[in-house]
Length: 82
Image 1 (cartoon, rainbow, N blue to C red):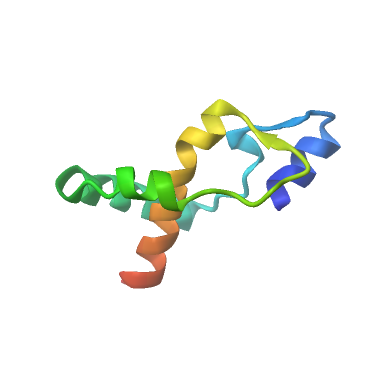
Image 2: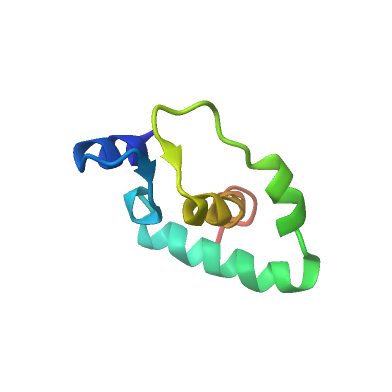
C-alpha cells in the first residue's frame, strides 16, 4: 500500500489520511458518494465491507474512519462512470 510506504519514509508507525494517494478524481467521487449516501445510507454497510488486509503500518483512527468513504468513492468510479 502506498500509504504505508509514505508513513514509513516519514518515520511513522501510523498511516495518516494524508499518506493515502487520493487523487482529485477520487476526491470528487468521494464527494459524490457522500451526497448519494445521505439518501441511501450505504456507509454503515461499507463500514463492515471495507476492512483492510494486515499491514506493516497501522491506520490511524482518523484513517480508519475515512476508509468506508474512500471505498464508496472507488465504488462510485467503478459503477457510476460519467
